[in-house]
Image 1 (tube, helix red, strand yellow):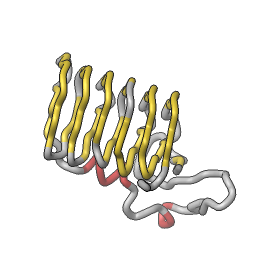
Image 2 (cartoon, rainbow, N blue to C red):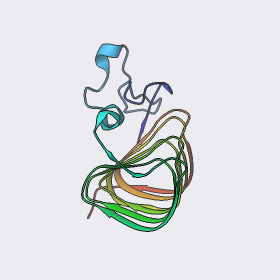
Image 3 (spheres, one colour):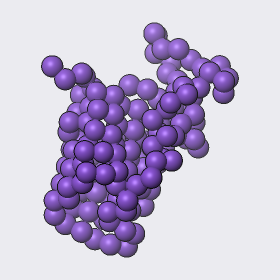
Image 4 (cartoon, one colour):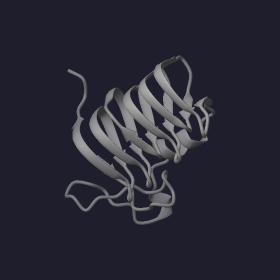
Length: 148
């Protein structure tokens, strides 16, 4: 698990006081491919716009962004971004998931999950990699492991 030392820049340095973690000492020591920063810049299609409420099962083969309220299941073979003002109640299946808003539900089968600085997640997370930025709120069960 990685923790960000900055609530203002998701892709900035990642640090932890736990033994065995390298602590960046300057901006030059920042990870060059921090998922949060590159994912924010990635082009996504808006699947649920602001001020829209949708229920059901959404399936995508391209990077998507949720900006409104969604209840149900989201499945994607690409990146899913839950925007700052978005609220998702349900299950998300995606290899890459970035949460900037609220998720009340489960994350399953993800390779990499990033919880942004103002994210609020309640539920179960199963992922190979989890990045939690300073300021994120997480309540639930977390399992970070490579698939068997």
